[in-house]
Image (cartoon, rainbow, N blue to C red; front, side, top):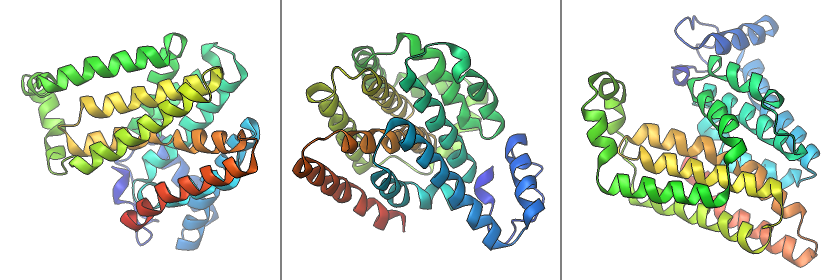
Length: 277
């Protein structure tokens, strides 16, 4: 697992982590194995990715940086590094959807190779494959089905009948999903749906981002009995907030609306920063 990587043992042996992640570490260590070099690249990679994403989408870069440093930097670039890097690839691939091209190869090769960096890269492949039939209404229907399955405890029953899968997920019962986790994520999903329904209903790219965001929340709900896995799934798809909120901010024409929305983003993410810190 990449989570054990730290500044103190950055130059150590990581033969047990994903091959792509080991390759990236080897490249960085050619330059240097000091904490400074490590920190530099852990900041450079997301900052450059966000610059690319916001430039291509003509989004608000400052909002993207604020959301990143308050909501994602501490948990995923100081701790769960591998998944954080996979999330950057996810953003890169999702940004490519803005050009309207539905061909698989536009992001397919990244999606196929991304699990070599971290196993959560599988979600990139899943998103790319499902893109052609993804819509907000279908994503909402999927959530209803997942809610009913979870209400009947079917996911837990299925896992209990599969010893291998139960063994893999058993440690994830330690960190349970709290009612606050449910409420906070549900509130964010509802907020994004409201933005789509009343302000961006005719925006094809925003529809795709909303559908993918709801789909990710549904997967979180599906595995919510397995705390650590559920939180990882949720935060992976929550990385779409780095696209959605800067995208919205840049398209509010009235200065007063843009200021109000930016302040709302500050209100949403400032408590997250205090929790992560």
